[in-house]
Image (cartoon, rainbow, N blue to C red; front, side):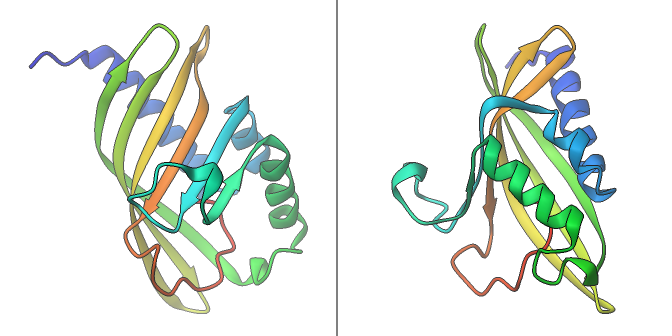
Length: 160
């Protein structure tokens, strides 16, 4: 097995940067990481791949991402003001596919949320389709496969 460590390091650094932006609520900069046609997807069925024709917790295009960020920034999101903070742990980064047009990356994430003094964890597999740019990458697609996506999910007032 040959691993392109330069590509892996660049993709990992990009994903860590995204996680840091989200944990520090730097949503406007987070929006700038996206391709204009990119999709943010949080499916309810982790075996499903036809996201556009099935139920999802989120299936956001650019307009929906902007509206989601506006709600979080304004406090109009349900319970948004009660979230004390989040910390994401990203690991096990692996390049699945590389073409001239995109790089597919899979990794593990645990998002820890503190709300009203209670710590809740959300483990997930993330799959990114990243488009190379002169400056690095933009996100063409991000799929968040929560381990408990088909179970009880309390009010979410953050971006995975």
